[in-house]
Image (cartoon, rainbow, N blue to C red; front, side, top):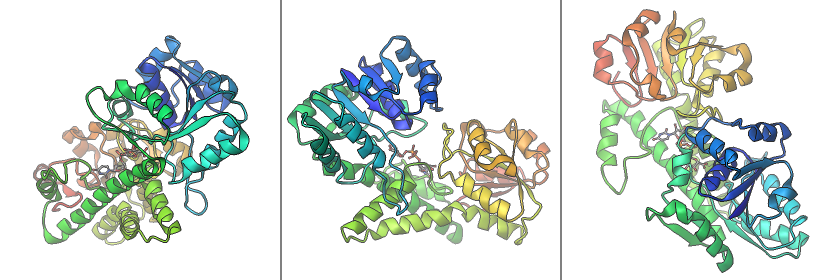
Length: 434
Ligand code: UGA
């Protein structure tokens, strides 16, 4: 099938590449000339494990192309994916100007039937707004489909190639058949393509992300309570998660959820509800709790250092909002850095992928080490903010040699509690005894 993908951000690039991988001819469009030129030369603009192999293979075999020319990209395409940003606007609501602007541009060019698919996370009613744009600007027949993406950064290729489900919102039989044909190779294991109306599909995406954010937040509160009552959240998590109705996944407590999706989507759903005069109370609590959770580790540090962090030097392991990505959007590490700098502390950070992004953002406000152990040199304590595999089984001898004091504040519960006690550490983690 001939496909066009408008927008080569995270979702667009993964979608385009993975669609090419199953034999489709995909042209990705972006307005940033330099980015497009680099992608044409085979330079991947993001870090995503496993994507580079597919990216290079499909470019070489001529199934994956890049252009800044919208007309050229959509000329022969049967399906056009809109994978454009929907950032929170000034009022916190999703800003649809990129999506609706692209719809208008496409409407001005097309001369025969197309399926227009919204892949970005868009509020309920967006498909109707996109339809209205087409109605206003062209007489050519189009079907507008909502097809939200559920992939996670870091495991995006696997999530796209083997999705738990594909959700397709459309009221058109013609579009339904085309989407079914397109996604058939990805659901061969028997996972469903769930067809529904556009509004239900749009809401499914927000509800899924908000539910997951709620699940994490609930466990963060349980962890906080564990600390007060002397329970161990790792045990509670296992006990609770073994109930199939609850499930083991997304129950890991930590320093709050971050990234480009959960914070934005929870807020957008709460605001959408408000528009319909519905007070989505649980989401407001989720946002409040998460805000506090991000800097709870600082409260623990302030208490340990009796209010005085000034002049202390801290090693920070992990900057990305989660492992296997260089993405630092809404990363809890940034909130921790901010609080520590305000308190007059010094920070030496190490992250396998995200240091360049943080350096661009913060300049020389913090320093960066070449490896995790250099970051520990002379540090008063180690803070762990991202659960990179690399940190899970460290060289404990080197760790001890380099740290000034054997103190760890672990926001991701990486180490066995008893082991750290036996090694003589003051080890403060989440929801476990000190
Ligand atoms: C999330 C969803 O998981 C995807 O299904 C969705 O497609 C995506 O948003 C999106 O809307 O585009 P992502 O933001 O890449 O994916 O990352 P997650 O793995 O969901 O992690 C989000 C945050 O939750 C991270 O800060 C992570 O550290 C935190 N988290 C996750 C926990 O604190 N505990 C957990 O048990 C799981």
